[in-house]
Amino acid sequence: MKLIDQSTVPPDAKSRKIKSSHRDRAYGVIRRSILLGHLKRGVRVNERVLAEQLGISRMPVREALLCLHGEGLIRKSKCGLQVTKLTPQETGYQKEFRAIVECAAVRLAGQRITPAEIERLREVIAEQEILETAKDMQAFGESDLLFHQLLLKASRNPFLTRLSGTLGMGLVVGGSEPCKATVEMHAQILDAVAKGDADEAEKQMYKHVIEDSTYSQDTACADEDPE
Ligand SMILES: [Zn+2]
Image (cartoon, rainbow, N blue to C red; front, side):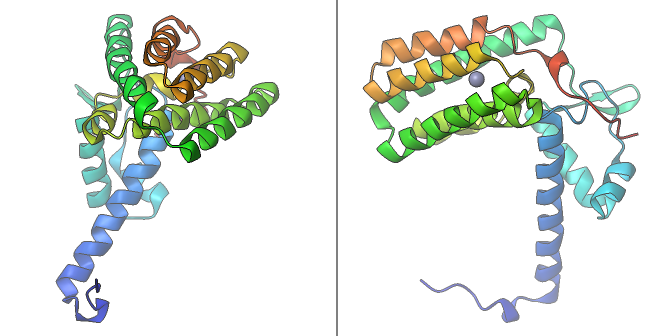
């Protein structure tokens, strides 16, 4: 298999490539900022300010915001765009959605996960123990999100994985507080998945998603307002 010669790419195609890479970077940075709580729930999103912060033009930022709007992380309001802040009722719906998706994912993961993936997930849990002791909220939230993403990936079902990227699932996962009980629940989920015990994996995941009170939008470490 041979890749195309980059020097033969016409100038307009090259510039399209640069634009899409700017959009992808803007999408990645803004998404991460929302999931990790740097951009507070409910805060207005200013396209110009974001473009300045990222050192790019407004168009790729606008395109990135459109994608995030599609995922439910950004909403339109009377005053313009803002980071989605779920109502308590919506948070309940969100948890139900997560429970359906993630319980299905761990059942499949129990049959399809590889030894390398189990090992990687054990490393993630070990890292969470350290972050919990250090009370490093940002890194813990990131690691928590990674744990759930890796389990979804281990389901080997691309539709499930894609579904998890929509409807703002990360709004709930990314704002978790460092907590020993959360790390223990992760370990119980992984043990069940590693044993291929689908019922137990589903039971533990359901408990984690529905009953773990550390998941709250308001726990996110919001330290700056982009405006
Ligand atoms: Zn978790």
